[in-house]
Image 1 (spheres, rainbow over the protein chains, first blue to last red):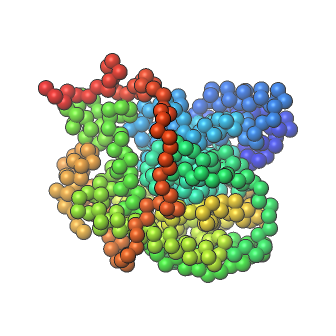
Image 2: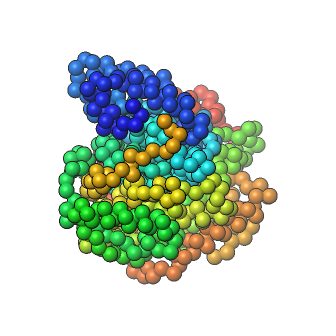
Image 3: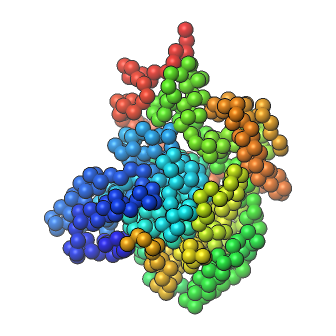
Length: 485
Length: 95
């Protein structure tokens, strides 16, 4: 059952081939047997899952018409608040945090009747590209357990790749859905900024954060998006636009679709074997009738520097709420209020989170605001304008998701910048607020490679259409790591 | 821009994160690396470019000025480190 896609599981439940309780037991059993190797879960919610599965089965047995994901198991990244279930954001700071409310995304899945198997591991507060910053230990990539799964949604991606769940929620601030999708050989979509509610999704950099799905196929991402995307009055940046049926256009022809290839995404920093896999994928799409055009995104090289001003600046403000007073970690025997703040935060946050808070504090401090934050926001507009110009000539932009396949634990050394550069091709879409996607397109040294698809604002359906058509003529998305049977 | 030990001490105070003496050098090194990266921004020509706060230039929605949130004090305080009589407790601030 674990080799079936979300769409196939939904059909199997509808036809009575298996029940939701059987399905849920099957996945819970796999998690129990296999996840010691991957460490992709922080919390497994077995009894809650079985109760939800029974309820889904009962609803179906009563002859009710049920939504497509009713009774289908999924998992949530541990950044989404779940009422009554610990939500840690992979931080010691929130190891004891049991939210009194659920995120809108979580509520949407409850309304859809989905069964939640548990909460997945991630980089602490979503800050990282390797899942090495989690307080609960790193996640291991199912394709090669000596390598990282990517980050920050490494647990969600590894769980899908290891067939411990058919799909997962995740979040993407600079590549945290697309990069782990690429490194784990699965599909992932970061929607347009404002498409998926951020309410109850623990904030990292609020002008960049966006929730989205991870699954094995584009069709499954479309099913997930139909549940995740919604206008939410409780999220002040949620956009009040009708949500389309993302499955509606999957089967459309891509004949005549104009694909742009930015020369900056095939620079010297790109692994030549990754480049070859991506070029092969583009040729495959040409065979399907798409036309290929060379484009330029001239300010691409400024995206990482701009990001490492804006994201830490916003993080330093967002994470000031963790003060040891109202919830979360508090130090022992504080001498006074100042000592309580200083030690609770020093003990509760890991090194990378502290580093980003300090960088953000520096960029926002008196005398530096114009040189850093204001400058970065100006550069952000230049980066956005590059995309606006490109989308006058093409419908979608394609390139690599990341420069290299999965790397070994600890291989990025002590300089944080080496890790930051792994996100060089994904960050600019967050800065511009555009939707971005990654789908499997080949292998380098037996490790998966991701093809990135960037769309215009709210053009997720067209991206999913292209990805689905690609997956009709290729089988990269059907490959599975050895040892997960 | 180069930063020094005294900058790290000031940032630690502003961010309310205690940094032990033995960790100041390592923190200084890693922050210097990050700031070197972001200094690449200074080369960008941005004269006359308006800073971008939102990709679609959206503005905050207004809503009717009515009560929408119920009282959840008990649920919120159930997860607090220390409370008494509905109040959050911290070390004594005023003698």
